[in-house]
Length: 305
Image 1 (cartoon, rainbow, N blue to C red):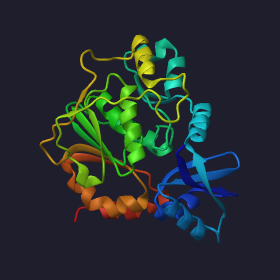
Image 2: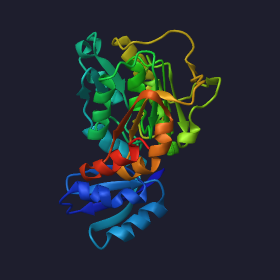
Image 3: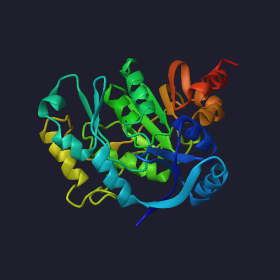
C-alpha cells in the first residue's frame, strides 16, 4: 500500500503562519483536522527537513499516511460545493445529488475524486479560481492551468467554453488523479494533462490512449469510476458518443489566452517570468494561493518590466 510522507502539527493558533512556515519545503497539501493540521510532502526527505525546521516553534510529529486512510476520510468529509454555475462533487456525492440540480440548464457538474492531488475545489483558493474563470468569456480560448492538482480548473475551463485546456503539474500522483478525473466527466473532450513544469507546455501529441480506471487507488471496491460516469450520464450529465479516446491538444502556439496558477506566494514569485511568457499579450493570468502579506511581493514580481 502506498504511503504519503506527512507531519501533524498541533496547537496551531494561526494556520496562515504555519502555511508560510512550511512553504519552502514543497508541501503538496495541507489538511485542517479537528485537533491538528496535517501537511503532506512529495518525499520523505522534504518531510524530514520540514519537521526538523519546525520543531523549535511547533508541536510537530512525522508520520506516513496510508493512501486508503486518506480516501476514507475524504469520502466522509467532502460534500458538494457550488461556485456560481459550477457544482463540484465526489463521485459518490454526485450520485446522491438531486436530478434537478444536475439538469438545471446553467449548472455545470464537475466530478472530482479525492486524492493527494491538491485542489478538489473545496479549498478556498480553488474556489476563488473557479469564480474568476466564470467572470471571463472563455469561448474559443486556450487555457493553461499550472499546478493543476486534481485537474478541476482545467476541466472547469473546458466546460465553460474553452476551445482547449491543458493542466501541468510536477507531481506524478496529481497528474494520474487528473487523468482519472477525465473518466468521471464524460462531457470533457478537450483537456489534457502533462507531467512537468512550464517547459512541458505546449505538448505536441496525436492521441491519448484511454486508460483503465476500475480499481483506481483509494476507492471502495463497489465504486468503479467507469460505472460512475455511466450513471452520471444517465442522470443527465452531458456526454459525447463515439470513441472513448480523447484528442490531445494540437497546440501550435506557445501561449495561452488564459492561465491559472493556484500555487504558493513564494512559488508564484519564482515563476513570474515563466508564467508571463506563457500568456499572450492581452490575455488573462489568474493567480491564487498567496497569503495576504505576500500580495505586494507577488504584484511586484508580475509588474511590467
